[in-house]
Image (cartoon, rainbow over all chains, first blue to last red):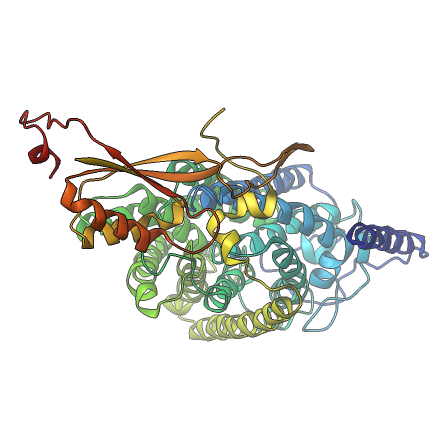
Length: 457
Length: 113
């Protein structure tokens, strides 16, 4: 019976694809129907033409961002118990497969097709009509298809960030449904608000260079919601659940950092001064943040810790994400150091008092780091760095800070409420949490019938 | 002197340790073992190859005690490890012939405590 349902789903997908392709091709003029200056690119030339240098860099960047999701799998996988490590790797990996498909089918269209303020249109379902020709609003010098692929990688890593919150206790089927619904009803709208042509936050003038709002706040707040509603891990109340393989976590941090160059510098959508500056500030912020956490650890916990340094670096990289195209290197230093300090407070002081079990600190690192980064963009942004951006509070423009504050608040509220509705729906239909017996035995064996490590050959 | 060997579920270890501390039994050795009692293992599948009824992870405790601690140790393990479900494990009690503390060369009951 179950295989029959699966077969039907597969057929449905194939048929949908077929219908989309069979429709007569309608051309959507790439002319600038919505005269909004793109925030990330230099002023578009009169006729959009692919620049090979720009396109090559963005293509490589897309591949770099893709690598972040397996990197994240190791970052998280090292921190869970060894009976759950395959569960984490599998969740990251299946998101890579699942969201890639969703993105091609309808995700890109809902996010980026010119539409209403809330959601994009359906014109680009199945990536119809998207080819080598640039689309002026989304990078006038790179192929439109390339922009869609680059953005696909962002749509993949964002839901993957959430899984750290409900690690070690979510049922796999419920997880799949949750991710499909979350990508559709939370990621695509927020992405459209901030980056899509006609998105209402973009119209308002919000600056989010590479996804502080779209990626880190949206995933981070959802993580908090799931951690609260799914409850603590079995045994987490009595005793800390220790990481089973910190070298994995450090390996994952390295891959994330590496991929982040594509994430931030690639978001310039070309090889230009903004891209190179983004590369520099990304590295600086991550480094300052890792250093800061190590020093804080040394002062307050007697020794500098590897896990702390890795966590700090990720917090700093998350914080610089929205700001990377708009701030200079000294601002990046401050953004990274402050990000590390406030993430430290959120993770080690605030979380234990509030009592929710955000297993791998997704909220404390990504949401807190992301919110700080979005607000910091409102403080440190400078037109000297990127003429297409805006000046922040410290450069005499308090209005930008208010816009950033509003955007962060709205995303936090929408992310929490919308994902809570999805969570409750999934819980009613499939039950989100695994049975206690399965949780004790571990997700590897009970959800996937596999063991990561053997004791006997 | 007795040697008490207990095979328990991995997730009960914390509770058993706590009960043993409460019973003032502080010296234990713990190892990870695989076992197969009445509880069937979980099927594992690797590229379609099935491993049925596999061994399950268990924790093995070894505790050497003097006679007057035997019952309190057993009841502490029972309190910590019992869930009432199949797979809770077993306790074995063996006669212990000799015990030597390496640091001091003490022998017998003195060496155990």
